[in-house]
Image 1 (spheres, rainbow, N blue to C red):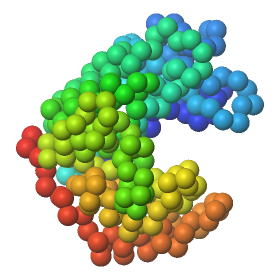
Image 2: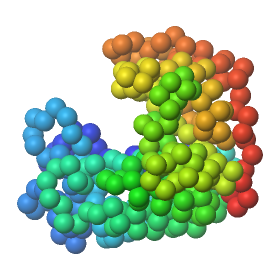
Image 3: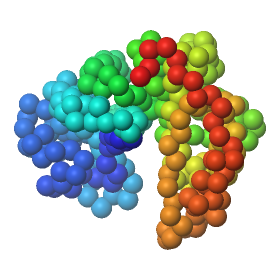
Image 4: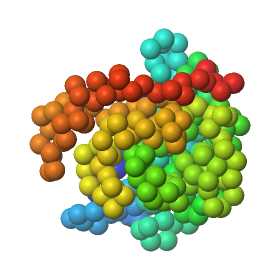
Length: 286
């Protein structure tokens, strides 16, 4: 499985091409950035900032054209590989956040971003006719676009994913209103128009990140959750056909430390004993 990460953390440093290629940053055809003489991105630019993010301007067609070209090349290379499971695009909220949270950005709008995501996903399914394409549709600036994208995905063989999988105990206690618009629309519970259960119509391929297993990011909702609690949600609420777990080797020096249950040797045993039960594929998926 290929996981496509769409943003950088912190601020974009000079001559750093690790997230956004330098040929994009150096060419004005890719659109303005917050920094004069730099192009094709938006977000954090203050040196020394302890928090923030930046991301390529994928809502602008010339920038998206380069990502589409990459997906076409990857499809040519990998689509025929029998053990290549899926391509998963990390959540769209990161692009919206980077584009709108750091000053005026004339290029960004939810409608522009929605249009370019559809172009990307359409091109990706064409490049990977035998491989699942997953979109972690979470949030736009406004809910309507997130609802519309999830509904479009269900009609165009794009699997539903998420970067933030909750344990079932949290969903039982707090309900679904704090889940992303994409996931609320998937289960037919969105307050902004996504009231039809889409789970029978699209594959559900979820990700479980370190924050769900180890960190305190979801502390106010009872996280981090045990692997079994997450499996219960994957089976009961998400009805996941696949799940991609963060692999903790057990020697990571984190604060707080990785719980024993989340270390791979123990996690693998839990997953083996409590398998996913919704492994069917809807019609039209590879």
